[in-house]
Image (tube, rainbow, N blue to C red):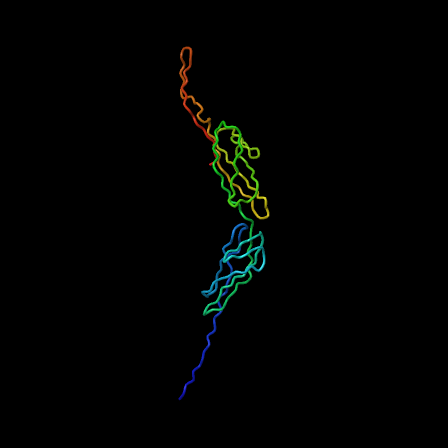
Amino acid sequence: SSSNSVSITVSKASQSALSITSTTGNFGSSLALTTSGGNSSGSISYVVNSGSCTVSGSNLLPSAVGDCVVTATRAGDNNYLDVSSSSTTITINKGNPNLSWSEVSKYFLDPAFTVTSPVESASISGTYSYSSSSSLIVSISGSTFTIGDAGNATITATFTPADVSSYNTATISKVFTVVGGAPNAPRISSASAGTNSVTVNAIAATGSAGLS
């Protein structure tokens, strides 16, 4: 008897479906693109099909608010064919300013002063307005603060970006504490009456106002 050798060709398999799972981002920030699915050990690449976005590696860089359409492809390997996702819409929302505000120290009897504005971390252009929870303690006109009484008042700074189509407004609040007394102003600790005089004993007292 005789036998014949038979050649059997094993073709590469199709990968499981690939999908893009990162579908929302914010203007002013890069978005790390992520996927699920696929079987190969191959790398994943991304292509922008439409919209105001670019891709750098696996990061999406939006240049405007709106929608970007992106396709992902996982490369094949020795066992699998390439696989691409469907065209996926990624929504880019307005950016969110990030505010910080340094503490301000003032004394109760200090004159009116111009407050130092909060700092926006990305240097987004815009304007600030201020409000006080108690105008009796701290009254505000524009950016001028006037201390009126001892106590606590919450000061809220509202940032309005110049480009309102790309950025949201943002707020930051601080508790402004006004402690009665001027720096080193004397405070009566005791008093005693004599026949023709009054003896007053005083000590230095400090008071301050600040955002905390």
